[in-house]
Length: 110
Image 1 (spheres, one colour):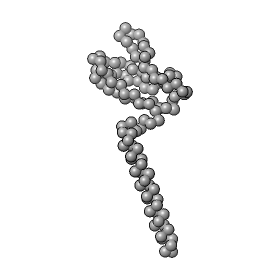
Image 2 (tube, one colour):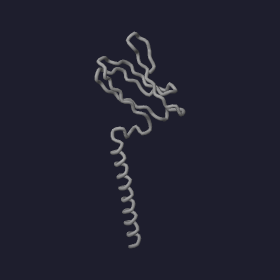
Image 3 (cartoon, rainbow, N blue to C red):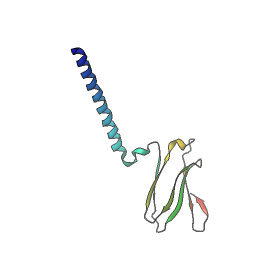
Image 4 (tube, rainbow, N blue to C red):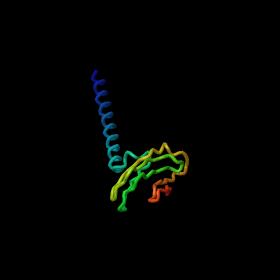
């Protein structure tokens, strides 16, 4: 009976030690990655409007025409972030394109 209690005590101590080590490395990784830690499986795009005009309907696409996201309207000096999932990327070409409208109403792809 005494050996069983010692075995249980040692097992619990090892278990809690392993949990502590796991949590230490988990929180260390979160700190190193900073605010982008939830985006490791995709792409994050930060858009800054440095012009003095509002930018309507900015659409970001992967090379295979899969949409990453859209910024509906971005005021002068404004910032927006959009994210896309890496599972949407099919192939080795990971080019990123931006579709936007210019003043005369035409659509550009940049």
